[in-house]
Length: 488
Image (cartoon, rainbow, N blue to C red):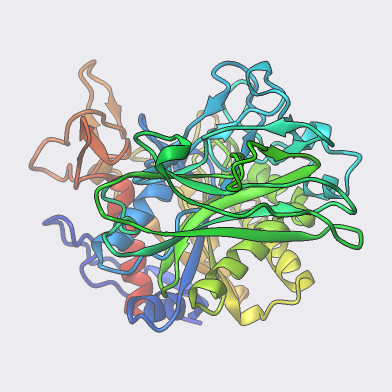
């Protein structure tokens, strides 16, 4: 256990922050970051929280993107994209939801939407299959916000017996993604479920995203027969190709087979998730909770509800993919909350202990080494000068949560807490709105120079596709990484 003091935290600005103690508790996250920085091992980071997971007025430039940008800026090797869902519960038009995943996108199908027939939402239509255990049983939102109506609920794809499906949607890499470098041998990976004695198939494929057609296919996989002895039998199928550094790519699982027969992916099929990676040690960042508008207690309830098969399947895929790439299978859970509702010291601490227990339970059930899993928690950034959360909260309630969070880390030696307020004060996130009010978000221009206005929390792009170095999520992510690295 420890409490450490910071060095310079905002490496991307001229602002020096030299506060009192910042990090408390377990040193395991620090060791994970240190080993990643040195190239000794890989690390999958899982982000859990409210809208700050993917907050922004554009894309998912919350901590999900901020952490990836900060890791990239530090020169650490990226080994994979997030592990992405294939289906969303959002069933209104458009039939495809496409959240940005940092220098790429995931095109999620909408199972049950007429435009995507006969594809089905596994949560609602897969109940008679062994893979019904993948149903989260709650509105678990990983990509797209839970505040959407209806929410982008986490789901899986199901094709019933003898139905066929064709689609060019999937996980895409933009030009400029660190994976998409000339000469990199990449792999598109699909996690799916096999049925007993079925005639079902999947057909993973990687396409040139500019012209996604069979004639421009970069690579195709052979048909994958789905026949096993019984029960739940998830497995991964992969396609490999070599990036040329000039094309954007998209990997999808529902295409035409390579034998020229014209037979497409057909059921019965249960498709869980997909991603892209390369065989090297490095980092990846995946969202496990974009619970917009939710309180600490609500977020904890979501994770506690999914700690069985739904969460275990995601952790299994993260660990298996990382090991296939050359790492040992380490996962770091990064949890933030407090902005919404009326948290007290007691409710905030109880929520983060529940979230940690959910991950530990799932990890232990899978039989994985406990030393390969770690957690870092923090109370949300300051929203006002009083350090209070939403309307109705007690004045200074977030400050009370900060004090309690530090004690939580000292009382629970396998937990770690970072004091975000010591890294970015309210004044540093403040700007004067055009209507005379003050607000902590800014969009389409960088914050004014001077004073203490050095960061904004509204996304990494401030004009067109130009990256704004004053993005507060990147700056805070960089500061968190720096704090952890300093104590390793």
